[in-house]
Length: 223
Image (cartoon, rainbow, N blue to C red):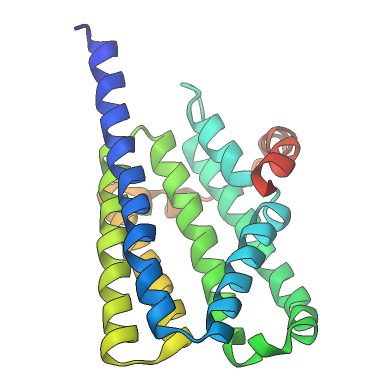
């Protein structure tokens, strides 16, 4: 087996491990959620998930898709790609702050969880970005371990918050936030992503090229 084929097989195994972890997570947690959350809480949790999954590609212009694509170019400037993607996520969070009061008025039942909604959006956006960034850096082992780490963390925090502390929907949201924060911290150090924070520089021509690539992908990402 040549070097290229061996690498392909390794990547396939690593991505399979990561994806398998997410499938196990769904399988294990659905009975826990239905047993510990009320019908209203479960509905709000679903509303949070749907809203964030719709808002992310819309407000970030699906820039994380371009992050992965442009990092795969041998001559890519990783620092500039990192800066553009991070700035786009920052702007998207500002937009969420602007439109979220309208969402709360439309769905007043989420008002008690407003701050958690904002945190969930931001942390999810950053987790998605860092995940694609380390994939673009060809750090498939880090990506796979991150997936397993997230699975273990979210199960552990759900047991703590839902079964032991019994804090309902707040616990459900905190479990997601804490698990994603742990994943982000792991990627920052294991994937050596932290070093790109000192290389922040916006290239407007590259920004235009990345958005030209990502914007047509928005309908697919939303669907």
